Amino acid sequence: MYKIKHAEFLAPNIKKFIIEAPKIAQKRRAGQFVIIRVKDGGERIPLTIADSSLEDNTITIIVQGVGKTTKELNSLSSGDFIQDVVGPLGKPSHIEHFGTAVSIGGGVGTAIAYPIAVALKQAGNHTISIVGGRSKEFVILEDELKKVCDEVYPTTDDGSYGFHGFVTQKLKELIDSGTKVDFVLAIGPIPMMKAVAETTRPYGIKTVVSLNPIMVDGTGMCGGCRATVDNKTVFVCVDGPEFDAHKVDFSLLEQRNRTYRTDEQLALEKHECRMNNLH
Image (cartoon, rainbow, N blue to C red):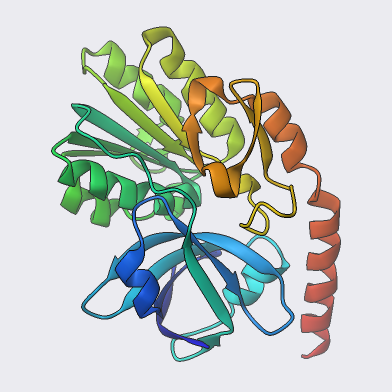
C-alpha cells in the first residue's frame, strides 16, 4: 500500500498526488512512468512521474479524470492509500545540450513536459515552455515552469489567458520571429502532437513526442500501445514512450487509440451508475 501524502485539484478533473514511494523516487528519471492500481483487482493504469523528492521519499503524479479508474483515483484524498505503484518504467528522456529547447504541454500533458523541461535546463539549454489549455483554468504548472525555464508562454484556445490560439501557433510565431529553436518536445493529445510535428518539419527542427496517451498496461504484453515509427512496429511502453515526431505514423496512431473507446465509455457509465446508487 502506498500512502497519499498530499492531494489537490489543479484544474477541473485534474488532480495532483504526492505519494510515498522511496525506491521509485530514488531511481526515476525524466520521462519515465509508473503503473498504478487503485485497489485490489482493479485496472492497471500508466501515469508519468511529474516530480520526485529524495528528501521526502515521494513521487508526484498528475491525473486527469477521464475514465472509470482515473476518476476513481481522483476521488482519493490526502491520507488515503493506493494499492500498487510500480516503477519507474519506460526509457528515460534523451537529454543533452541542444541549445534552445522548447517543451510544449497540452492540457495534462504539461505534467509530463515539466520534468523534461527541468532536465533540459539542468543540461544547460536555454529552455522555453509553451503551456496550452482550453481556457485559463486548464493551464497548469505555469508557476512551477517559470522557476526552471527561461521563457514560459501560456496559451488558451478561447483567449481567456495568455496567447489566444493553439500551442502550434505560438511555436510558429517564435520560430518566425527569429528565435533559433534547436529542439522541440511535445506532449498532449495526439492531434496536438501531430500538429507540432508538421509545424517543425519544414524547418528541420529535431522534434520528439511522448506517446503516453496510447499506453494501456505499461508492459508491452497487451499490444494496445502498438505504433508505427519509421515504418517499424514499436510498443510504446517498452520501446518509448518518446519517439522522433517526424517518423511517427499519426494517422494509424489515432485509429488505434480509438480501439477501446466504446469499452472505456461503458465501464465509466457502469461506475458512475454504481456511485449514484450510493447516494
